[in-house]
Length: 247
Ligand code: NDP
Image (cartoon, rainbow, N blue to C red; front, top):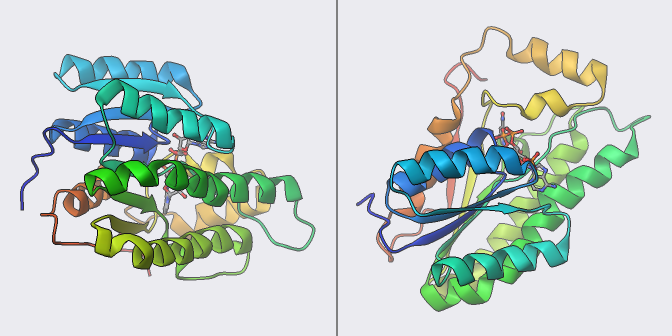
């Protein structure tokens, strides 16, 4: 295995914080040219400056993944700036936990639009380029795609749906050289939980993870790098990585 991604082009969504930011850094340091996309442009610009200072070829891009036209434009922009696309990391996501009964259904719309439809739009737009260069698509799913709990139903549904979409895609394109990778982290220390709107759900997850040694975003970035740096004939299809303390 080599970590040398020289000449490869990666588009990472949700690169303004957490796992996406760490993944952009890891791929860039391994030699890839990286397009970093999210809505908070000032954060992306800071990341762009930091990586460019290390000699990484990087381009920041404002993107709301719930906007299909913007997803298509983002892929085209990556291809225009760096000449093609080898790796799409669908990382942007929201986790607005809460019971189904009495839920604020605007949370559901945000989760489905971001975690599921956004990934579908980007994958659809990127696929011709990934097929062209025998590239890879990495889906940042979650243990929540595999382990269901009360109080997390719609988030579970988006991540389980993402896993289903990804396995179907894998069967469709693997013989044409495109690797589909599903990465399923357990609890990672990021901003993700701060956006939960339901106070009881927020308190419940804070309590569930208190005292647990969480993963760092870099731990997940290492898993992404491991998968995409494999030789072309090796497809790492699924990586679940949890904190040792997480049951
Ligand atoms: P963060 O909140 O730190 O990062 C989420 C990223 O998604 C941000 O960069 C945010 O950027 C971006 N984002 C959210 N909505 C949109 C949108 N509509 N368009 C574009 N970008 C968007 O959390 P994490 O790093 O933890 O989350 C990354 C992924 O990891 C998510 O898919 C999450 O479900 C998954 N995950 C996280 C776990 C954890 O414990 N933290 C565990 C398992 C999976 P911006 O607001 O600037 O647009």
